[in-house]
Length: 138
Length: 138
Length: 138
Image 1: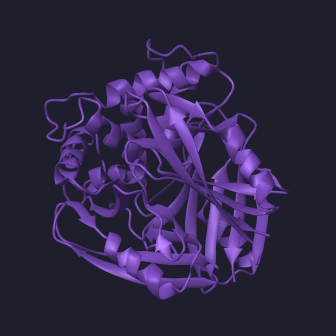
Image 2: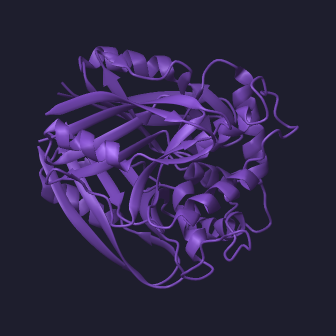
């Protein structure tokens, strides 16, 4: 049993966006009871992460940390056609995930109690982001 | 053919724990000969990695490196309810992996000769950690 | 429907190697129309990434960044049997990916328009690298 669809998200600025509900709904409509839900973001300047879903300061701290780990506008970058956040966004993507695989069990997205699924926009301005979703199982 | 089960591990403190044998055994009992073994840790302060499995200093060096890369108790963190290792553990998890997919070939876990599978506990005290395992194939 | 094969790549030195075409070809020969293509590198000192595939400076900047993030020959490393790049290569692998899962849709590798698949050699000298490929679907 296999289900594929595209999900489209609009981001407004750099930061994390909770997409857990859209994934949960897609699993529900797929009809797959047990298997794997695979998410793949079709971009090189935004990524996917699993993160604590209760306290919002976790994600603001994550943003703060990443701003320091990967400097925007570093003079060492040659690739800066689209501004100081351009190369930083590519590096941030490589250090996190372009795809996530999540178990589906008894028709549900089998996350841990504190886990949420987030799209991380690494560009500072708004973008349209596509995620290719594949659910396989029984 | 699909096999799902939960694996539970007790950690005693921050560090890496070799779980290769438990995964190998689960593949053996699943009956799947060729396919994929998917591991998913249901937590946001512990992660999964593939790492060199011969010389223990690789993993102690990895611990040393990560202590410097992600400082415990950084004054920039707002999220520190559970102590100085709380937010650091979430960041370490995001920079490594919450899930691993490993090929199954001829009934065996098809790792490279030096590879092992490790649970990385990022909290400084003991925890119970659950991994959802899904094996799909023929 | 399941297809498995080993791919072998020769690297000449540290850096990124575009393997998109080999993966695309393997998908074509597998006969799978819709599903997942899973790549798994059987080594602990080379990794796999998805990265921007148009402007080569993205990948040279990525190399520059990683050289600073993970220092070769750091005096803190105990594991240095094979030289100053030995432990650094293990850390770089852990911070990036040992496996990638990519959607297959209508017989094609469903990458975003700017995405390419790269093997990242983290050792400074030449190596033979094996990737176990598994394609599952319909």
